[in-house]
Length: 157
Image 1 (cartoon, rainbow, N blue to C red):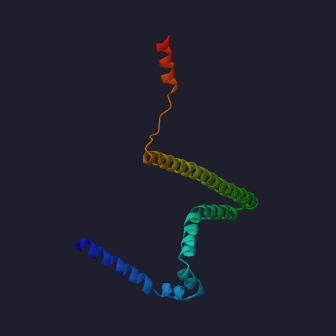
Image 2: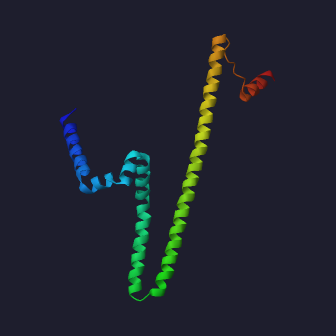
């Protein structure tokens, strides 16, 4: 290993060690939730991904709520309820749209998988037939194409 890699590894090890020695991290890892997540890394990764993905829409919604609360302090109390309701409906529509989009993408990817696997299976099956015919001593014969037949008809006339 080069010196740069060893130095990078030492820096990484010291950073991980400082995270593991943090009192808040130690307290969390000793709790039931921390032990469960340590035993189930897929659940921990799924939880991390959900928090990371949902942070932006929730942050926008909270900024929206705070903005409308400030407007309410300026005496627009009636408008606050309407605007928050509209914002909640808009958030619901965006999340439903994202759900529908993910279902559509999953459907397209599933269809692509089925088509590609069928094509690969067909290719391997036809390749196996060619090998069997080569072993038997007979080679596959090509059927004359439509263009060849029309060329032959032209010559016969």
